[in-house]
Length: 196
Image (cartoon, rainbow, N blue to C red; front, side, top):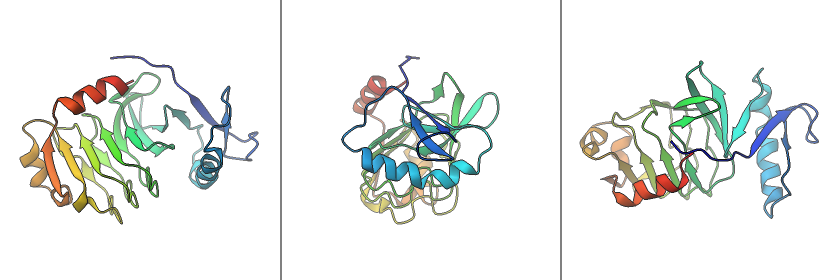
């Protein structure tokens, strides 16, 4: 497993954005700062509901399930959402939380690891730019309610592990993707370059 340097953002009541705001350390404001600020402010309500501090690692808001598993609670400002199978600081990623990527209209590709077992309610709702959804789990993950609400998955390609396309075609919702194909060399190369 490759390691990478992480850009950490933490929620802090002393942040310039108030309770539950975002504190950014050691990074200059990027060109899209206003959009990031709006996203950070919209997440305040969900952050305030959590008693523990929530950490962002490489664009993933992480909540611990237990000592070995974590859930991706929210995604942060990416048009290609790549979820690692394991995060050194946290554990194996087994879930995508409810509304994790809801309203991220700019997202074009999602890449989920082999350990994913559950995707929460409306996790990818309103992802109107989505074209490719890669799931590396051999068993189709269980889906919450309205996972792809207002996301036209009939125009998306679902990419699954070799030998697993029939399994996904047999599951409701997964079988509604416009195209279902098996992982090829291109996806494996992309994953190696971006995994952490």
